[in-house]
Length: 38
Image 1: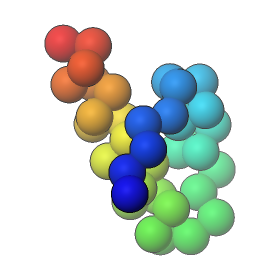
Image 2: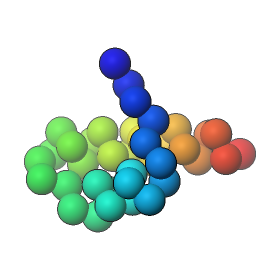
Image 3: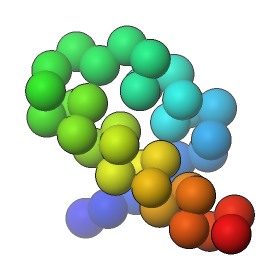
């Protein structure tokens, strides 16, 4: 299940990925947030 995180939380997760998988998921979250924000 994909959960869209608030931008601040997603940004924090992207800044400090603890694993390649989390880094990839953070990138997906950022892309989704960019789509939502237009």
